[in-house]
Amino acid sequence: MIKQLFKGECMILRILTIAFLISWVVLPGCSQNTRIPLDFDPRGKIVYIEDLSGKSGLADFNFGDLVILDPETKEKIVLTRDRYYNAHPSWSPNGDKIVFESKRVGSFTDASTQSNLFIYYLKTGEIVRLDKDFKSRFPDIIEREYNQSPAWSNDGSKIAFVNRVGARGRIVVYDIEKDTLEIISDDIFFRKPLRWSSDDKYLTFRQRYSEAAPEEYFHYSLVLLNIQNKNYIEIGDPDIRIEGGCKINGRIFYIGWSPDSPIGFTAVYSYDINKGSSSVYYKSTGMDISDVLSDDINIYFYGTVYLNDNFKYLIDIYRMNLDNYSIEQLTFDGHEKMDMDIFKKIQ
Image (cartoon, rainbow, N blue to C red; front, side, top):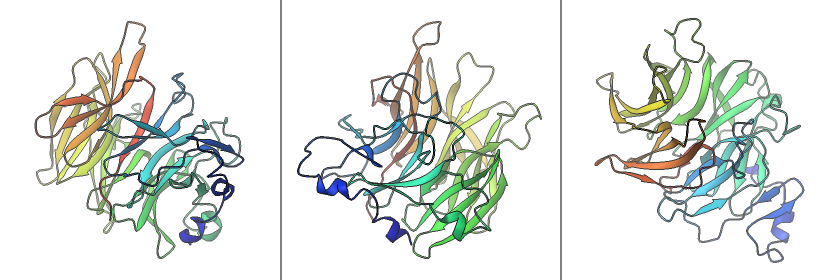
């Protein structure tokens, strides 16, 4: 049961609470993890992966750390400082835990090391592996012990993830109370991220566009998958490659990239589910934009500004108001960042 998993490992961290009144500690098996203050309010906070060193760590096999950002105060809380391969953090429904993908089993410097699923406990800084026995308990579902892109449902009852087999994979949903796994979609050419819709009825993810030419290996589309009937909608365009994607209030926001553009990701698109059509929501000028996330009032994205012809750049988080299109820069360090998730409410 997941409740048993949520208790173990790194208990020594609690013993050292009084002795170490600093923001992070070093412990075997726990690395350098942060304990969140008791009065921490997760509402509106963004968790993401950042290269803290500013030396292109994410470009080198995702060697980044978990960071929480307060969009209002611009303050950060650095959760880990271990430079493992970390990716795709996702908030639990009450904001006290974060599930994420990491290569903490085996050599973390080897890009071929398998990815697994872990739970970060904000109150203690403990990190516990979630999928440690999935392959032995569910051999008909977990083909390979390589799991990635976890996403916690908004009601807290399920965690979706991808069990990867080579270049392909299957989407699996873990029911926490029932302690069961269910295959939602099999044999997909999956590309991250995997995200729940705001009503928990759908999952969105990227895949290779079904109508792309054979040589266009990296031409992606966005899929809206109904987890009940397994039907899906593919949002694709022969001239546009798609990045990110999230569904709110009958719309799906995503980033469109034209390969012919002098810069990369150039526009935010809005797909109307009822009409079955897309339109440009925001056109970028002078900035690459990538990924997209929403809290129903704003959308958030990464912006890359080129500094010179040598393609040196800054990568920071921006927020756009859905009503008036006003844009605010939320981070200013220029470090590489990826894989945002925003906490919306407490159940």
